[in-house]
Image 1 (tube, rainbow, N blue to C red):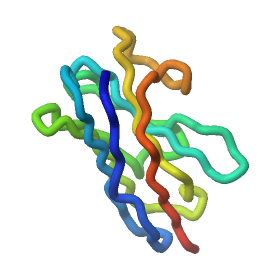
Image 2: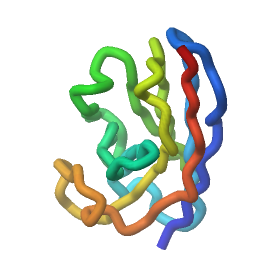
Image 3: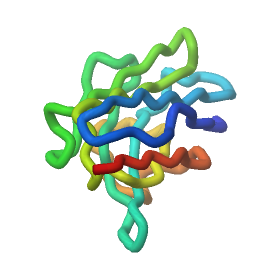
Length: 125
């Protein structure tokens, strides 16, 4: 089992950048697919990005492609979400999530069993 704690959220103007971090406690971090989701007020939680077990493969949602990237450092039990060219519509609570599935292509909430508490990102126009 793993516990996840996000950090790095905050307020930024449109066009700015933030880097979110998610630190995992527990064993065998490299056995987990890690992902980022976000939830804006009044909207459902949506997939943002994921990274494979050892990090060489990543995928991002169409809405953030070209602006957001994700990576991980298994030696530090940490996954990152680098967010550039932020837009007001990126405003949301951002969550990191983990799954021990052997599948990589996981994009729904029910695919992930471990969740952080979330960190607020607010982008002003």
